[in-house]
Length: 563
Ligand code: ZN
Image (tube, rainbow, N blue to C red; front, side, top):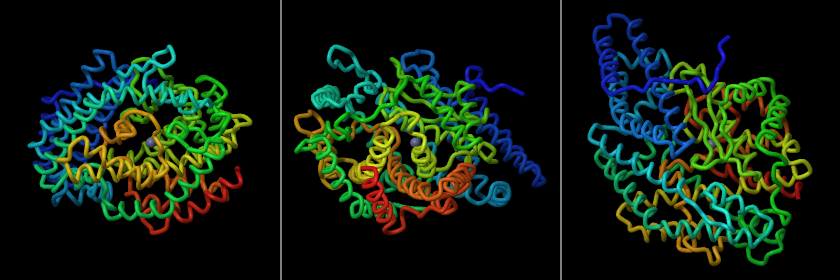
């Protein structure tokens, strides 16, 4: 038996010449092929090349995020960013070839029709004419990550990074919350010119690429980049309308209740993270203690999940502690050559640690359970489906929250549910904002801040920033990394949350059945588009009118019970 250990993972960096030669060899084999067996073999060998590239890119990206100040890791990341357009070009040319007869039917026989739809989206997102723009885009995105990672915020005698300062959002003391938010947003105010300029350049660059590719604006290209093949802008707008009708009023009620619970007459921005006058419940131990509790929890849930978690732990596939020079945030990545995922987080001692942990483990579990999918495109679904696995596991672990929070478990559940509901209007605001931005790419930075304020009035009408700098002028969105790094990747969370809440409703009635459907969904990986995957797991598509009405009703009932 081979032992999997992250510390031993090595993948040689590909070079442009090596890859050009490898692709030329595949084309030559297809030219010379006289049988379908030979065509199938070329298709499978190409998949192996793509797995190696994905594994290498994931390792390079991860090692940089683990230490953004390591010059060697940075140099590798920059090398990978520089090589990516060449790799994209080689791959797009071959995809175009496989989309044409007679090869098209070889692909369909081997992997089914869905991969053809994915590749049809891909080939619309690239022409050699935008290769230099893509390098420039990566560079600007890296500059944004660097700027946020470099933040040093003085707060009450200590120096915090942006991951550390946000823990005070949940402090029981109102002055502490206020002062920490003031310190955080003062950093953003001081860096507003740089943040405005980076985004302005990104919007200009992305719009330019879209026009070179024949789109009117970046919105169409953004959807293709997200590989949306079974819904469009009109579907998303219908969902946003459903949110305005069913969830914004519920969110307003929840915020009123929250103010009453906290005993304040006006709920300010710095109060929004706290739902309990004692402060939010926090996990009752440190990182190592949490790993032990998680091992017990996953063993109790299902033997397959327990075994998977032991592998994650034993093979060093988790980096969860906050430390200096580590990039902020949490994510899951994976190494197709080794058949395992990896999770990254920055624990800070709040309940968010448990939420981020169960969320990222949900992604990792799906990545692991679908590792035998036959083509690299099916290892992960598109993002709105990926987030179903992560957000649903946050709910499916509810029965075990006593392990982490002791007597505070019900308080945790109530807050988790309230925040999940409150998240949807925010997530939709982030999405709607980006539609406004890319529809008017020539807007000034000040006009963009005005667009964000319009979104806050629509989706977050209770919001009161008091005396905080920057955010009272429409600057909150500049902390939301997806807006800079992953355009139009945000509605995905709200679509998935709508599905996760349905899993939560079902788990309350029939936990075993809900878990079985969940694991079956994980195993399917990305072999089908969003609405088909959701349907196969017994979920109602969020694009079905009034989908949120029932979820909102169930949530109201449950919140009343937990109160
Ligand atoms: Zn996620």
